[in-house]
Image (tube, rainbow, N blue to C red; front, top):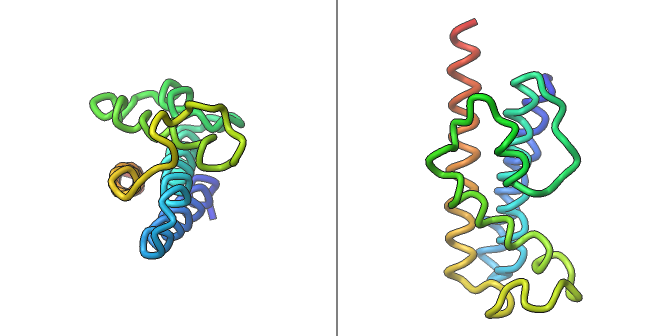
Amino acid sequence: MKESERWLLFAHQDLRMAEMAMGEGLYNQVCFHAQQCAEKAIKGLLAHQRKIPPRTHRLADLLGLLEPDPFAEDRIEIQLLDRFYLPTRYPDALPGSLPEGLPDAQDAQEALTIAGKVLTQVKQLLQEVSHDD
């Protein structure tokens, strides 16, 4: 299995966890796993581009390394997931990280949608490339 495929496998598992958490109303976990899904999908694309994915969780940093960047039009939307990484992971996260407190159902649905789009787009890009080989 290629490194990019391993990243996508983990991204898919994070999306699945987010979906299961949504069914249980665990919105902070939905948002956390959605962010992780997008992060790992983008790291998979970086690996495919023969770059070593850096040890960072910031989507803004990862998106800046993509050449070409297939997410240029969606960059701001994707980077919104970064706001969920710390406050949904640790109960003592920086106060005010999420001004309204923990994520609600609407935040969770938005995060799920964004993560799903990122993973789908990366999978499509890798399939297109494998067909060109």
